[in-house]
Length: 417
Image (cartoon, rainbow, N blue to C red):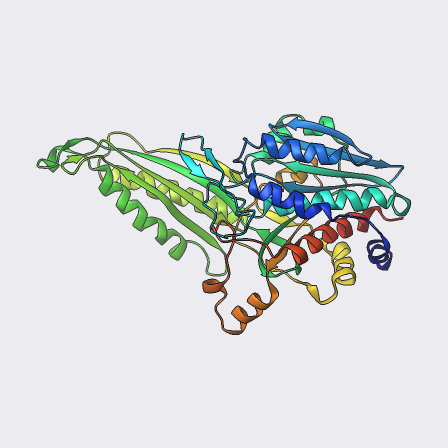
């Protein structure tokens, strides 16, 4: 493990270009499946390295293969789409870009989740690994994934023949910036991110004038009863030792004040750390929804559609046990134990497809003084900007350095001579 740390410390690689690259990406965010400019910038930068580049996988996905003789194959992924969020950071390179969602909504855009940092760090890791060829052997794959925010990009690349473009990786890695002391590497075995699915529910009622409710089957009332009952599932059917969240993100019904509508719609977002709990949760949701429809005499069962799937990110213990000592050696006190995050990711779709073990870790991005003050005053939730907020902005220097070196350290754990 000390060999990997020494390789990183001894390399003299100029990555000063990272700041301008990061700020350019941050200024020009693009929505999922619309990342043409971003993909072009990544592909352009990759021409500076000794690697084989394939573009346009699953939309705008890119892979760069660094071959260096016999040995294992290690894959590192970064995502690069942005969000329909208005930026409020006030920095000179803040985004003023707009875009149009799939639903036709014109919206402000921002890299509010840090994917611009992920991409910048992986390109920096490419520079380091390319320059360190005398110190490693095998194959390094840098994979740049589009459309993570809608949970579709990883499977889009898989379904578009990813396995035909890259050798099967022996190990896979990914990382994500978020709240925490800037530059801190937070790793853990087992569940790291929750599994998540969205569920679209359409309730069929019978329309009537508001003055004659007895002639209707009111889908708004049914929807309200479902919302109440859904929380009872988590409170009374999920063991207290387990984790589950059911969020009603959308409740839509009716258009006028004096008409009982014919339909209502609920959109749920559900999260778990356990596939058996997930199975039980979804069975209970369907039971409650259909039972409430039947109890109210709906003319047809509810339509239930699952979408936007993010599988459980479940770190392989054997990979963690091998990489964590290297993180400890490289980062010292800034390598710490992570805890499961309730957010979700689609990264694990890629190693799952190849039946490859993997490790996903978090990188702190909050200025250290701000973080330590918030922790001391027990005001982290109130004072610390988090992902998807308009004021979320990683502390650049410590975050990009740690993210770049963490990627290099993980890959070289398997490839170093």
